[in-house]
Length: 596
Image (cartoon, rainbow, N blue to C red; front, side, top):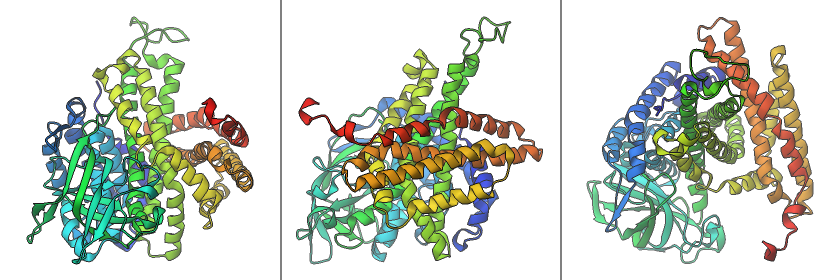
């Protein structure tokens, strides 16, 4: 069984060479100290944490799982000690507000670290990333009093946090939630209701757990416009800021799941629990989406990270496993058979895994650059442009990374054959752990509908126009003849995307189902355009470094090989997706419900 190795070299390539993160970060006052030396140091230390602290307890955590006894949850052996070490290193507050004890690091570093820990141990990572996401909602929307009381404890890892949205009858349709918050004379609220599927709702890793809960006031408007966001601690802080009186909330049970078994997924009951409003009354969804958008990119990184872990195992296995002979005749004549790498179909699987993983890693860094620009840049126009790109790209990143990540995990299992189906090599755990990422934090079908409906068809801000203008500018400025095939494919696929966009917009005015029918293949089409854009930029850098005599020639040459595979074998799918979208909604909606 192979061990996980964080892809530090590839992350350095993406951040320092393709995205030129140092140039951006050192130009903004709040991140001016984040140079290439610091970037590399954090990546290397993050890799050490992932490889030596988290990966060793991944399989044992899956086998033991979380245990629920008398309303309390016990995490797997080693998790509690690892969490203390992890928190002591300052990793939970890596990108937190420095005013309250956070490290203030940019998102481009956070996405790399989150990919590492998701790959090494997704169950463990979820406790940390949810705390970081909740901290972001508190930092952006809570009162100064709440920030001072809770953020230092959350950033330090002394306390953990959750997000509580889903109810037994209300998942995607949050407008029909039943949880209620009654205002009290002292400015607090008493919150009552039941939430399900709450990751980290109860555990033994920290002294306190802070729940971010969606609920409605008694006189709230119907639907999503009547939702408010509340902060509800498991223990009410005493006068010294330490956990004091137990609040009126409890864990009713934990779920028995397909994967991420070391992560406690809880039913949480709030029985008149004392709560505090975060943000404005009836503006809870907007506040929660600060956290949700953070988590959606992070959950995308779960798919990316697990896919990379699966690739590492599959590639190592394929190099060593002897089975059959090359179609051209024996390659290793002194051995009874050749390695799996002589077989074209095994190479197809491995290169598909690698091409999608490396494109996703590059795109995740690109999205993170936009997040950092939107948050830290001093130019209002630059912030506005970046905000539009973040809004457009978030549902794509969440869906593409998790869909492709799961596909990559399944391919990795397939490379190992029967050994991929048994526990020994860890591939079956990768498949099980990756599957949930397509479902939670907004199911991928909803993400596609959000992209097609809100971000494209009904968009009034020109979100897609910003992306198109950037790619057009890149095409206009690229004159490397060696990139001609990439540039031509990028241009043609972009034209196809725009033609498809216009067609769906036209049909949507007369056919109500047109948007939903087109949404998923449209997201997949846009993903291919973006992956092509990322691969073109990566290949451009790799060619330049090889020409300059960079001693790391093998690394750059592998980029050229993988990029060529993506261009020739994966990119042609964009034409089939356009044809699928062109088929419209008729065949989807024709069958009467009673015939299903």
